[in-house]
Length: 328
Length: 304
Image 1 (cartoon, helix red, strand yellow):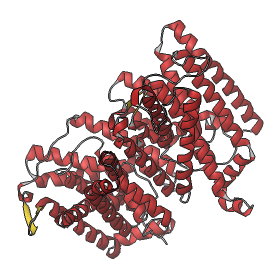
Image 2 (cartoon, rainbow over the protein chains, first blue to last red; image 1 turned 180 degrees about the vertical axis):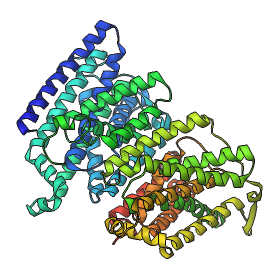
Image 3 (cartoon, each protein chain N blue to C red; image 1 turned 45 degrees about the horizontal axis):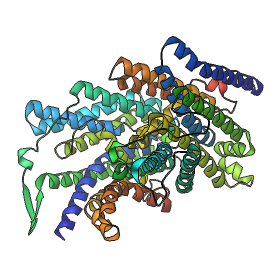
Image 4 (cartoon, each protein chain N blue to C red; image 1 turned 60 degrees about the vertical axis):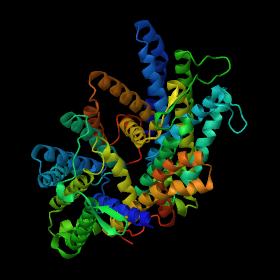
């Protein structure tokens, strides 16, 4: 498929996606299925994490098996600040705030800092060791969260109400839906321009041949680390939105199965396409919804489906459609 | 002092169990290049087979045998059905495929055996304890498991270094094309190694069954620890697995005994208590991160 043709296909798909996701709340309301908006909101939130993960797996060949740590850190930052704001007492002399414009940037900053530390250490390794060391860091975060008795420990933490933005009311499911939608679109645009920038080209060059890229005079670490941090911030944003959506956080957000789930979604949708993982998220969560309503033993169907995806889906559902010709 | 000796023995016993799991996993990775997340599921199947066989027959020996056979057979089945298609694929796909297998296995076991965790009694000949030192009585069963761990380590060393099969395994880890070209059926060798890994998991399952809780999800918990072990030791090396298993066993058991007290010296009691539990669980991951920073390929990598 030629480059221009791929571009056309991607643009068309993006337009179709925009129309479909814009229409969902209205169609759901007209048809009387209010829960559809719930599921669709979850899809939008997870899609932000999936796009972020695709940025480093698909374009940078950094297989992170620990991205749930950023998802949970974003969520816990929101929950902990809310806990102190509503009755938990001041935190280091700060009585807290419920303003999203303060809380959310703080949460993203926390994720960026964690990503700098984890990335700087983990990127010394590659291959299996990289997979395992990211997993190890996520496990550390998981056990720290479990041991935080002041913030619910194992049971997690309830959040009194959603953060507040000026002018709009996030308590309204439809408003919240469109906020998530807007952020997903924005984030996908950001990631697309990152991928197509010089920075993104270097990242892809490093994936294809590290040695050749180094010989062109490029130091790999700053590029890889930067991509890792950007990806972590996106995943943290998903965690922030999730905490606001569910009004509940628990150590499960950092569980290794969550990292595996993100990975499965990205592969399902198509690695290195950015748009594919959004489709992957929709299919995965819809499938989960259908299977759980069908049987409590839904894992016995979901498991083999994941295995099949790995065995047969070399390019994911959309790889052939959205992928550029990079011969791999 | 007595506490220290006891904790060291506990660490040794935990390390022995981890070694059973890690040696199989590291062989599978070293030879076939496959990250096999299903390894923990084999261990769970071993424990469940043992518990239900003992419930049915009342004989510990039958239980142990069915654990070895059950876990081994399931491993061979998994290899033939799924793993053999993944040998030349990226690790990413191996992780995803075997993650799917874990979900499947967990659900299948809970449908077959129910969600209620089975109990397995300690067999009569392993009950009681012996006085090792004045004032230190140590359970016989744990000593027996340490001994079994040592036997397995010696047995594997002999197998890998002094038999024809072991020679093929080492050769396969070095250069699989060459072994194939020399007329060895590499496919059968792979299946065999996978089955051997499964049998070792079954053995670990038998060892865990009377001491730890048998439940769905026990496999994943130990699996991640096992990965820590082989990454610390150096992926693909059995010696590394042994060193890693002992290190992790010791750090875990000594951490559990001393870390909370040490924290209390530094921090107020309430903070120390809450942090202590988390830090003990996180300690082996800290150990792994430290080792990887100094030696990115692990302590004793298979190929220097």
